[in-house]
Every structure is written in C-alpha cells, then in structure tokens.
Image 1 (cartoon, rainbow over the protein chains, first blue to last red):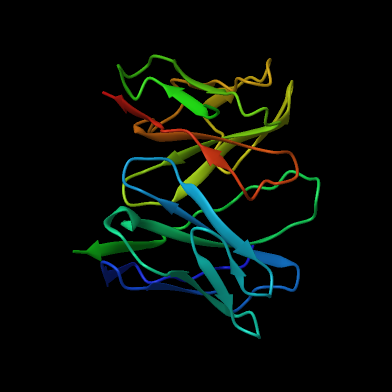
Image 2 (image 1 turned 135 degrees about the vertical axis):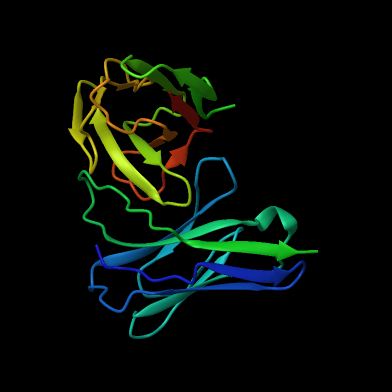
Length: 113
Length: 113
C-alpha cells in the first residue's frame, strides 16, 4: 500500500466547502484512493474512491491530481453532522482477492457553527 | 433494514477470562472483517473471512480467534493470551470483490480489568 499523509486536524465553517487533502506521492499505477469517515464512537463509513479521474457522488467529490501524487476530498456544504475523522487510503485493487484496508490516523474535521 | 449488528455495545471482563464479541449481518455479504481501534489511533485488522468456513489472519491476530460457520455471523473471541485487550472492536462486511466498500457495525467497547 502507498503511504498516505493527512493533516491531523482541520476546521470548516458550517455551510462552506470542506477541502480535505491527502498526499500519496508513492502511489503506483494500479492503486486506488479510498476515503472513509468515522463519526465519534461509531464505525467508519465509506465515502468515495477513484483511480485517476475526478469522482462525485451524493456525499462528496474526489479530485485527484494529474500526477496522482495527491488528492482532495470535497464536502461541498459542510454541516455539523460532517464533524468526523476522515481517512484517506491508497490500495491496489485486483478484482477477486483478499484485500484489507489500512486505516491511519486520518484528519479530524471540526465543522464550526 | 439491512445492516450489521454488534452486541453488546459495552463489555467488561476480568483479566484472564476469554470473551466472545458478536457480529451479525443481514446484507448477504460474503466477506466479513474484525478491526481493533485504540484511542486516537486508526483501525487495525485482526481477522477477515471471504467465505463461510474460511478466514485469514490480519495484522494483529495474536490472542484472538474467530469462526465463520454461517454467512451471517463472524464472532470474535478475545482470549486471555491477548496482552492488551481493552479497545474498541469493529466488525465490517462487504460484497465479495468490493473489499473497498466495507459496511461497519456500531462497535463493541471492551474493558478488561
């Protein structure tokens, strides 16, 4: 797995976009970037993943740089319920196989009223 | 509603006792996982199972055991050999081949004194 680096904490004003960066400078060509979040004392929740194209779903957008060495998770209109720890994971995917996700310490996002 | 249940939410045991944590899912997922989380840390994989009657060790399997006799159930036993069993334990499941989209239960907080 490629090593990922995230800031330990960030603040965001309620209603504004939250931009969470992740550095994965050693990522290889077949490694995807996955994002999860964990609200306090709950299980993590899958958010989004991507390989090289930008991705968007109902929860967030994922912007991956052209050289794939970094990415940004965007929550377009942060609410207080988005306060959580956000994990960025870089992992190869080879279809059917036994793969495990490695969760680091992530970024603690605090949405401020 | 489909989902993953873990019980109990809080569990207290005396040192030297084995304890079994329950994990049940009705999502019809083939793969199931057990993670451990310590305060302020990310998640670490204990065991995972891709199919009934088969399971593999994760990064920190020592002192733990599992069984997978039914698709819906993946109980974890914390044995007396586990040196630091006090932690937050999370169970997850996924569709086979979509390991990256794991659905997590609410967790069990185990305290051993």
